[in-house]
Image (cartoon, rainbow, N blue to C red; front, side):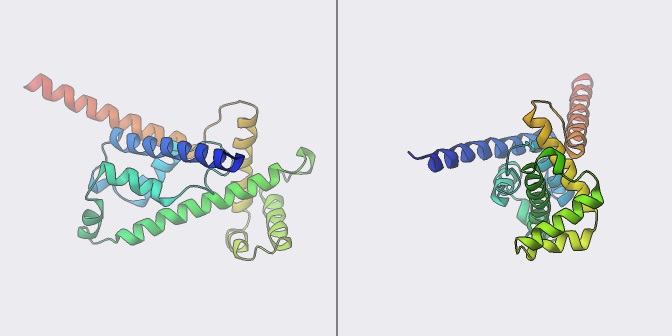
Length: 202
């Protein structure tokens, strides 16, 4: 087996674990059809984030769909019944993945630079991203920095910080990951209290 095959096999195993983690998160949070919306799915994604190279860029929407279908098998029908669109929901989740992948790709480009040459402010990072994408002929990706201004630079710097901390072996969670953990812990605590109450009154 060649190195490419080994890398692909390792990636498949990693994302299988990610899918399982998403499913477990949904179960812990007590996901039902009423919880199926972009905000809650975004929290699930944040909860499972790992500072691997290309984590978001190689993340497939099927990873989310498979976990969701296991937790809430009738989620498509429930979403449509509520007057929303299952296709629009998936489109919103894909947009979240696309945005995260863009920020990650920019951070990885900056990570390839010597530390002394990396941008250090949101505005300088955004300008560096714009110039670099233009120089590489990546016109489609230029939509983000042109639309969001310095925000893409700020986001890339945050991801860069996570990646450099991971290289040093220093745990450092994204804000979204912290929020997702708080949500999960609160949901599990509420369910535990409800169970205790039922036991007491039975």
